[in-house]
Image 1 (tube, helix red, strand yellow):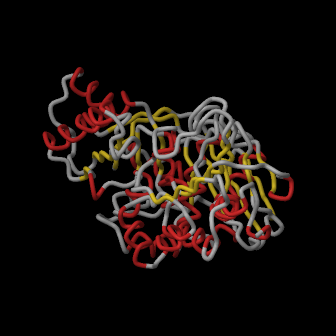
Image 2: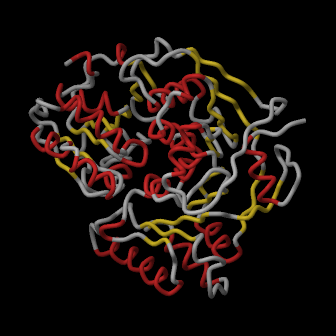
Length: 419
């Protein structure tokens, strides 16, 4: 019996010829990631358990991105812990000030993650790196501490569900719509502790930005990881950025999948997830009239240069609707600089948008756009749980960039066709 791409990566890192779903393994780690919320806990556990030096200073990555630029004294203390630890351990990959970006956009951009890697991060959206053909998953801070000491982590090998997308995507429909539609179909526990493997002719035509969006939200379906088999698009992206050699894995023709789900998405509409679950999805034609107070374009799901270009196409020559706040957050300094050079920031400013430095900010209710009671936001972020972006009486509607930008101009949820 063959193996899936996820199983092959885990087998190699466990030093085994084969693995099977349900098997408990210890695997070596290529990248261990922490941020300003989770890494301080891991660092404390590292010290409590006798840690002196990390196992490999080039495989620990610290990115203070959630409450930065520091919004208060507590967040400043959190970042100070990372800063001191990075200096003490002489870490190769520590990002701060003008180099810091949203972690799950930053690491691929910097070539730190490559195909075939095993990546853990004390952040649930670490699954983003599956877009590169890596096994990537979120862990707790204590697991991160153990990995920093030993270079290993334990896993239960997940079953794999294969999602095959057929047809041709309609205008404006992109990876965010595909993953929202998929989560709407299977539910937030539909892939619980399983690998979501994305395939099909539609996938082969997607940009890397769209693939990152899909892998990023695998966790919203309960998945252990989301993964794409690398193709020419992946390799072109990686070869420009890689910091080390890599291996590409494919699923065997006789690999055993827990399930195979096929979708013809030729007539798929733009998707919107209503409060308060990512699975509460409707097509744009079924949204009705939903007035809004705020729009957020950015995050590790949709803050890449392709996303900002889409926003600029829609916003150009327009003005944000009265009483609506539009916040645009480039995911990394590189994205920010490229948007500046391409004139996108001018378009945003002329539309009356606010441009934030790279930060997770409002996605987790941190800062740079907190909602008041009764306010509604359309966001290109990945979660819309109760109180996620502010007051428990506020509401978050998840969508792709096309819907978010159009909604900012309309003052209500809508798509480009409504302009």
